[in-house]
Amino acid sequence: MKNYSIVRIGNEYVVQANDQSVLKIASRRRAAQLVTEAVELLASPPVVPSPETPADTEIAPDIPEVS
Image (cartoon, rainbow, N blue to C red; front, side, top):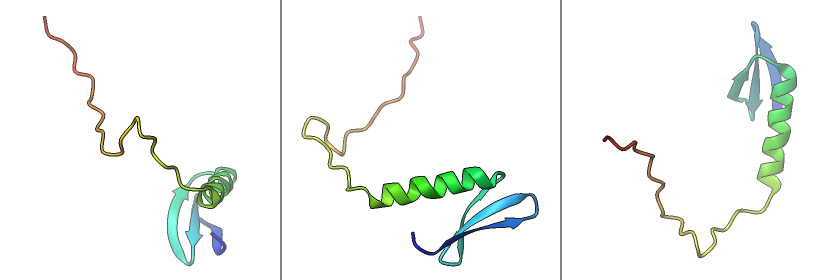
């Protein structure tokens, strides 16, 4: 993410990437932290699922038992 900016609009800060607004947040410091984390994630290698946990496995929600 080479072309990004943080601009103040009213009481909020908007993170823009390539002139497109992608995030609106109340704190400039938090916006900067999120941009840093996004840059690190984009630079990291992709995660490959392990054979024990297939990618198409669904997680079922907990359903309480009725007695």
